[in-house]
Length: 298
Image 1 (cartoon, helix red, strand yellow):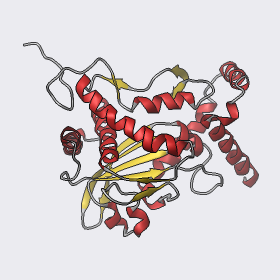
Image 2 (cartoon, rainbow, N blue to C red):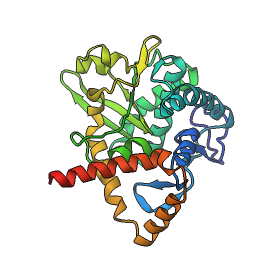
Image 3 (cartoon, rainbow, N blue to C red):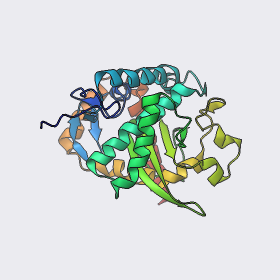
Image 4 (cartoon, rainbow, N blue to C red):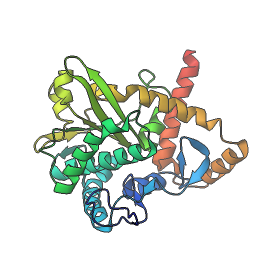
């Protein structure tokens, strides 16, 4: 019998050849915000890419459904925040569904490439997210979603140089578990697009961290507001070590690129009259300033 691949969401229709693991608008704006108009993967610093990860996951119908959530998030949250036009947003079901779809596709990718130590333990999380996306409802799955805006780092302290490039110019994710007192092991998913981090948990992190109302403002719910002025450090502590390691990795990757390639990149950047207004250039200069401060303190 011939085996036919089905859409990971509906399980009925065949998937399109390649659908984005991360939303297409994220990839598009990453390239637009870079004077080089290219992408680089952290594990392949010498290689130039033109697109993000793609997999045969979704059929056309499911792709369009998730795309409608992406469009809403992009137009109402992402672009206004990135462009500095809006600092506060009302949370609603569409934002929650978009966040769930991010985790859903990323966890599927994790399972496929076998990043998780024990993929079987991640499957219940994946199936709960599948039900959320399939039924257009997140209220009955016992999952907790959080959003955190990532702002520029201008002073040395918690994060090393490279953090600004990581915050604003990278896509990242991690599926991991944490051990909580009296609760035990619970799975979490971390997905980061430029300047916004999404965290999914099997338990209410507000209860675990015993946080104030500042924490609830980062929680996806039907009511309440998400203020970009609230940078909840307690929430980011769950992925603090990963962010530090990625910041260091980004800095070290610069030394792996040949001088010839660097010179060509510099030439291309310098001929761009709008280079100083690009997000990538601003982030790079912030990290250079952090490196300068680090050398002065050494």
